[in-house]
Length: 218
Image (cartoon, rainbow, N blue to C red; front, side):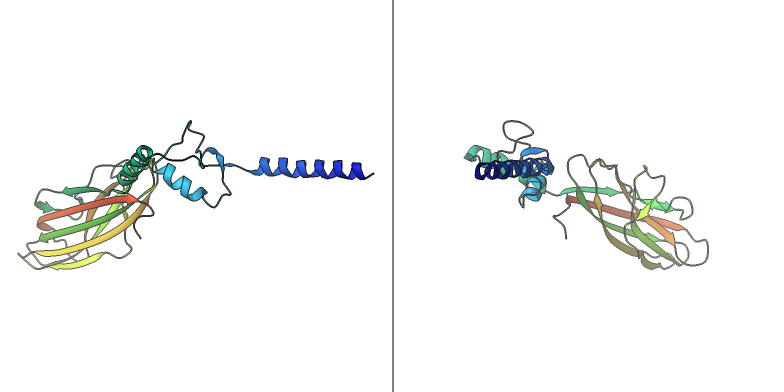
């Protein structure tokens, strides 16, 4: 009877172990790291930024293996590349601006976020003058459909008054999280914020976009 109890206890323990192993899932695709491990978010962060893609294969992380100084140099180099900001500047040629038909200027190219999630910091500036005084609003905007439609990066637009035959200036800053595989275009949008049909006789703008890892900008 005593032996039977021991056997039943071992069978029950084995069953619990099988269930536990069945419920465990790989972390970031690595079969030797459990997704319930407190270190899993760190492993995912490193893999998403291509600091390491595995050891002997793409499915093994080798969490307890030692790291040589050569391997450490490769890790540090990849980490530095992942954390280095990417800066893109765009400027439009000076000229008149019809606020009814061409409100978006300083459009950037369509950068593809192919490697890891990023956060974009967009700094936009607009200078303009007009034949008659006019109130204008401007804001940094983004488009995910090659400029067919635009979405503001901030809820409140920057307002300025452009005196007749004089220059006025406005600026805006916005941030946006970008997903992997997302294609985004940024721009500077100007709108008329007062009555009348006055357009801009001359304008100049500057757009600077800085992208970094999504956790690296507060």
